[in-house]
Length: 113
Image (cartoon, rainbow, N blue to C red; front, side, top):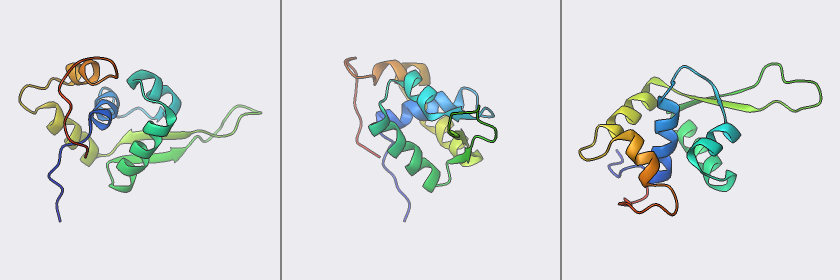
């Protein structure tokens, strides 16, 4: 069965941030800071996107001494296609999506994905 619902505004923000530089591996904490999401919202999104084959996930190869390895994320080809599709929806520019959907900023909220 194919899902036809649009991704949540939070998921759209994550996709837009990752699509800005799709070849770069990103840390969850850094990504959360950029899109304005706390860990309790961000990591379920990252896990769901990974489970659906839209993100690649990998462990940091050589962490500094005394710090555990961090999880890294980047878009797959399918994830990049979804990010482009969502950004191309009529009346929705990716930069506007990041700003409009932030907590405390008025804007249209769509159904959860």
